[in-house]
Image (cartoon, rainbow, N blue to C red; front, side, top):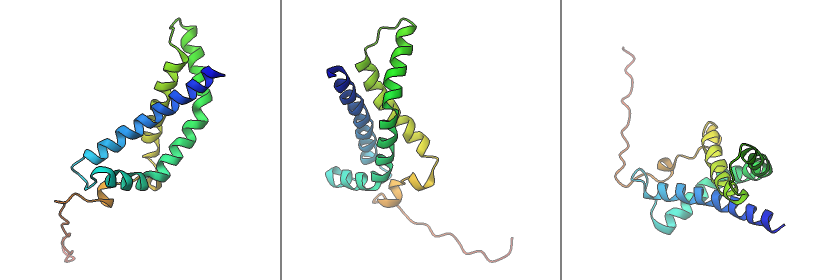
Length: 132
C-alpha cells in the first residue's frame, strides 16, 4: 500500500515537473509578453483545458504504464524500481499527450497570440486589386 502511494506521488511529481518546465519555457520566451507570477497565472489560465485533458488521460494510463512497463522491464533483466518507472512515466505521459493533443486545434493554445511580445508588430496584408 505504501509503495503504491509512493508510485502515485512520484508519477504526479513527474507530471507536474513537465508542466513546470513548459510554463518556465513559455514565460522565458521572447515571443510573448508573459513575465513573472502574473505571466504564470495567464499561462495557467490559457492552458487550463489542455492541462486538465492531459491530467485526465495521464491518470487513466497510470495503471497500464506502471504495472505493465514494470513487469516488462523486469522480465528482460533490468532491475529498475517501480518508483523510478513512475517518475519517468509521469513526465513521459504528459510529454506524449502534449505532442498528441497538439494535433487538435481546439486544444492548441498559441501563447504569442494571447500575450504578444512588447515589440510585436502587426503588418496588414495588402488588399488584392483583382489582377494577378
